[in-house]
Figure 1 (tube, helix red, strand yellow):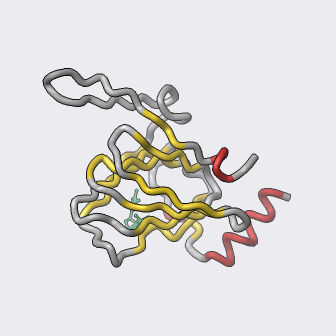
Figure 2 (cartoon, helix red, strand yellow):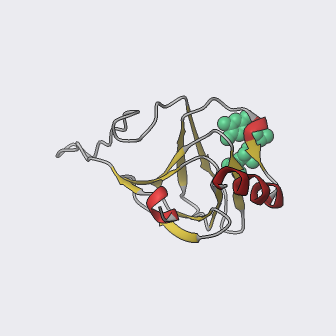
Figure 3 (cartoon, helix red, strand yellow):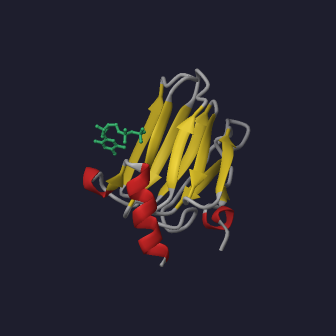
Length: 139
Ligand code: TYD
């Protein structure tokens, strides 16, 4: 399966009406996992690169609920970049995928949903180590 197919864009339903927009994301329905963790990143300016890690266990859905940012995604073999710029669209990133988030607009609020509680030991922050481990996973 290609990297893009493994990291699909997700389109969420707008349940809004004349009072405004309403986007609902339910675990195991709109996204492929049960939500154990929610965090959001804001006040990162355009010179900042965040992420720069892969996760042995965590899966993520990233949504720019305001503003925009870019995500560079690689599995050490293929690579692609997406711009997140609308609250109704997210990207699913499975475990053992390397990601960098950057080019944050000043109004960017990047919402992240995950299937895990935080555990720093399942983060791989060294790219060479990631390449070693990902080869093992794909072997
Ligand atoms: P970091 O992983 O560098 O953030 P990002 O991936 O967005 O660049 O996390 C920054 C700090 O926050 C680091 O000390 C770990 C801590 N942290 C938690 O305690 N829980 C979490 O869920 C996250 C994402 C980070």
